[in-house]
Image: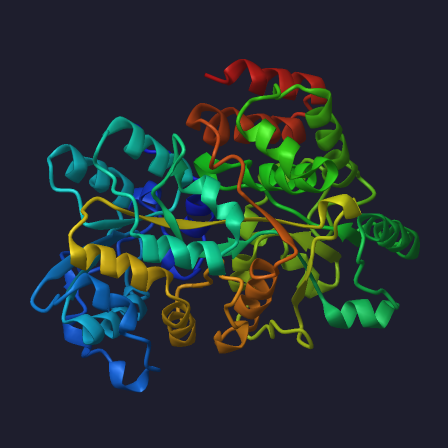
Amino acid sequence: MRIRLTKRAAAVAGTGVAVSMLLAACGADAIEDQSAGGDASAGGGDAAAGDLPEIDCAPYEEFGDLSGTSVSWYTPVRAPDDADYITWVGLFEECTGVTVNYEGSAEFEAQLLVRIQSGQAPDVAMLPQPGLAASIITDNPGLAVEPPEAAVANFREYYNQAWEQYGTVDGTLYGLPNSSNAKSLVWYSPTAFEENGYEVPETWDEMVALSDQIVEDFADNEAVKPWCAGIGSGDATGWVATDWMEDVMLRMHGPEVYDQWVNHEIPFNDPQVASVLEEVGRFLKNPDYVNGGIGGVQSIATTEFQAGGLPITEGQCFMHRQAAFYSTNFPEGTSVAEDGDIWAFYLPPMNEEFGRPLLGGGEVNVAFADRPEVQAFQVFLTQPDATQARGGIGGGNYIPPNTEFDPSVLPDPVQQLSAELLTDPEATFRFDASDLMPGAVGAGSFWSEMTAWIAEDKSNEAVLDAIEQSWP
């Protein structure tokens, strides 16, 4: 069985980003396994639970006496960030007497399928791809269990409802969100902006005007450009360019057309998709705009994504579109803060009609058992004060798409910025499109054709036709 490499996995495989973002698709060849292996139990809340805030234990009373029972939770989150999750579930253990056997795996996706096929499915699995969740649920009728009413009630009241479609299969809600991440960011240097009299753009037109102004201001220095980028990522080269497509699609045509595109209700060479590629080309294939500090347009294809935004620190580039996790790639000693060497602003909207579009990713928890202790654990995973406590523990870039979540508890300013965007009730959130599309497209032709578009100057029409022809 071929394991699909998601963009998120491809990104993390090449960075020092928190291991909670590691997916099994990375494989042993992509990143060294840092875990000791085997099951890890939270051990009755011994891991510094006394230093954590208390949570309301009342929601678990309806499930009866749970003392002496256990729940297995299988996830892609490995050392060192599994310790933060283990500490967190200690709160649930203290409330209920349930032992949570937490296990994070470097081969999560492959091993989860093996366990399911052998009749040894975990009680709960944290699934980093809605597509994987849907395929498991569809291919194994009767295996997944609907979450209890109390967990669903938490979701309905406190969470961004866009997530419902990512946990729903054939009209039934199975998966509830665990954590989320924001992608719609532009990295820049506050100092460089201030020195040159530039202001952070609040609309797409303002961002284009700023780009043109930078071109004019540095006309005598060809090494300096408004934008810098890199789409290199080994076998996953091209995913960065598809993120651009997704962000622009959401801004230009809105969530309804975005969903139609993801579900192939419109063809990949539809005029609406063509207009998106043309707009992306306005940036990535514009020799006046790119590739500051690196080279010409084609250099984008040969530049590893980790290095794509580094020219900002050298004053050779002013802007770099990339997800929140990119902050870990700047050189050691770089101050990443609103008043620091590097910061990020929200990628501006194009059309007021579509609100504040936000591209992102994340995970959903799906249960494969309906014992009372498992249902109680699902309530815990969605309980507002419990998720607030998890954020305060830190580690793993944990940000629940919970509109009541207080970002101030997060220890990292980039996490706080992401959380403010993700918990904004005005945000129009959509999951990364290529991670929702069939593997032959999302992790196949979409990546490779966008690479050819830049590296070989392949025409817009030829690129879109090729992707359309690859759709299964």
